Length: 301
Image (cartoon, rainbow, N blue to C red):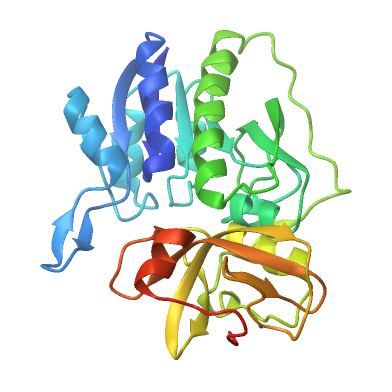
């Protein structure tokens, strides 16, 4: 098929590669504009932008698709279908209608659960046992369109948003290739009203750990917010990001370190901290972290 690809972050890159490997013609790649990044604040292309240039594709990064000129330019590509994955712009109806077969979105949840901006984070933070990817026919509402194909996967007991993100990206890439190959035979499944939840954008105010909460909630918070924005607490007056954890047996005063392996008591139960990051430092496994920043048994976080 002749495909318009619309995506921006690293999550979208395997999808673009899979479409190319499957033999589809990429008419153009749409992504978010380059933005200042790094110490020098130089404009840096998004991951999709960089990969598209490597592959030799035309890249477009309009700040909006609401204008008639941008809509006409997209329609002029005469695409069979648009594949949209974590693009970051709302698509007006004129854009949704431009490709002959419409626009297909790869959404990282089992719709109608976790419509919206942060489905991977929210699934882990809520303690969902499974999640997955849906290939959805896009319409004007927020992730409300009929589902053409879905792929499920179990969420591991120690899985972080980072690891689940990478798995779902690969699952989504395979799923869209399958969906395009069977497009004429797929039956759209209207999303039920029952079970709708919204994955609201993560706010940094959610990141501070409350050790008085049950361990199961603290563990989900740490894993769900890893790597960004990163759950955090103060250790010996320094703010430290907590990037991986597991549930363990134990108990004591809330926030107390119970052993020499960073097991911390919560309101109910305990968590063991597995990966941490101090300000200005790289992320470290707990044993390495402790060699440079000892945290003794009995310390209060």
